[in-house]
Length: 567
Image (cartoon, rainbow, N blue to C red; front, side):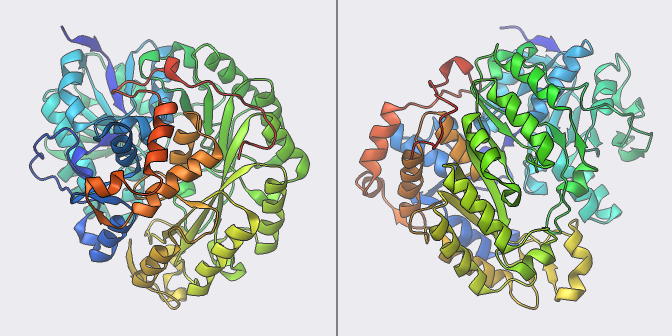
């Protein structure tokens, strides 16, 4: 098969295949690690990964690989169950933008290292765009560039995304330039939007990339990276909605990420999102209507709104819900429960909302004040009661160890989850990033250290890791969802959107959690309580295939707009 020339490939998520172990028995690439996390964070974080994954015959299995093992006997079909299968926004956005300007980008939603030879045999791109948003370490970004470069030796590689922007804000100028050199891409777009640099690269013709003057971009010239601070023109959000039916349907999953706004209405002190995304920009509700009309033509059935504050401001949110009520989609979103009332929650459920992500982070009023959350426990209690009274499924998220936090607060949120009947939860150790607003107040709280190695006046990271280990599976009814072995809320959505009920999703996660943290043999896993039932469930409700390409025609039949859920 001859290569097809295109303007660019866009990789939304690059998976270093040896992150867990080799699923296809390919030899590890030089310099890669089979560890789940970087050893530079110490044994505490390594233990954390072990405790939240299932070890079978000495190999660690994340949730997706565990489900593949249960369904088929090996891990090769893990992508059916991986949250990375959900169509990501960045690649679809730029594919749509490029198409409207006469260029062809092919979006590869999830690429693993062993996929590269087949992709290189099929496509001959003039440029490769690589999103950094889901990288967790510099080593991961460096390995991705190296592997992509080996597949397309003469094709320029351009990196953008939120991880790159956060690195620029976290490191000194010298350290950041050293990272750029280590990774070795041809250009780095240091912009949360990047429309103009991408379009300039696509229309450059025969002009070498190094000769371009790209807004908010580092370009490698003569072995050095040169910053171009040319003003970045505005691309209004209302003009740049995604024309879904014009995208390549080959790579479109039956569940997609969407947005109606950029950035966030709040400025929580633990969060880098407003720092990396810039000021809040709200799209007109009618843009959602346009996108939904296009989505109807594709076979997509489920929507994930990644707006950080989807229900703020509330009048606009009511308009969005009214629009969703006119269309037959199942949908999920972030939700600020302090703004809930019975009317809007009833309308959400009737409009197809299946579940919401509730970022409580803490239930201690002083810690919430330190976080600049603009909410208190009383408001959380009131909002949660409204959500549960109206039958909406909830995922609760907490942070352990934020400045001012104490051990008793962790015990407190377990009781809160049990008392309110919350279905799913996660709690993660505070990540002390120099780019977050709280970093400027380090002296006030006695914070020493960064990332996952810190201590402050009321806790240390070691204590926080121990509390996180204690909290796994501690709730009586709610199911724990790991952010290490899975992408938390998004893993629940994979289960839901492939036909599982609330109870079946909870049972799936509980079966996994019961085996996590133990060194097991294959026969011990296969005969463990709950595994036979899980195997029957996966056989009765096969997930959509994802063999490098997700097909919307494989979506299960869904019934949306039912009040009260199905649990």
